[in-house]
Image (tube, rainbow, N blue to C red; front, side):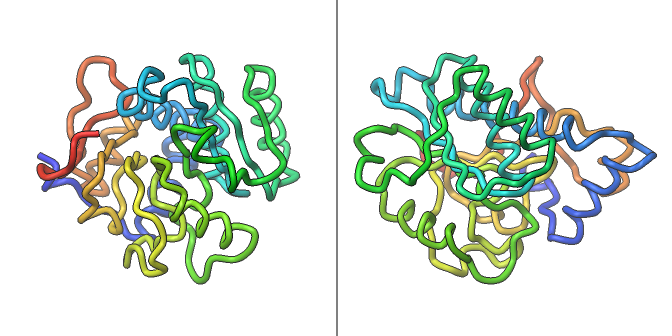
Length: 240
């Protein structure tokens, strides 16, 4: 039952990733990003199949860290699922991993744009994927993302956030009064800020080792069949 799932604070979220990446479980950052991006794209496919977008494209907005890497992977998978996808990636990192993710996305058919389409976002795009900030975010929202998040808040385009809504405090929630996404895909285990979230809520993390789940007392739900995500929406959540 979703009521038993453990909602992680920031320290617990960091610990889960450290354990996954450490010698006990042996995952790599590349692997975790690939699994996270796949889960995010599967969630989008379930909530916003291409037929719902009325021939409009998907816009993925990627930040400079791991959450942005998840977004780059998700964009690539969505193209393979039949979507038209653009990525806005305004603050790129010079790390080799991210360069490879960009190359993989480009070779798959993802488009990259060099400015935020504030004036045309509603006419061009049927969905925005929010992959700006992840669970490590804290403090004030700084440029260039301050204006981007403000524009998203008033864009009237559905938003799907990866792991936590960008700009939210992982434990205190929407303290900056920014957007509340229409869909959220939590990774490994949901975070405290999503405890009262009322939109469509998916959980991705089927790869989680049982021993780690027991150690952290995560109480994750059972994933059906071969699905990469499971619905953990609150009972009163609206139908998309």
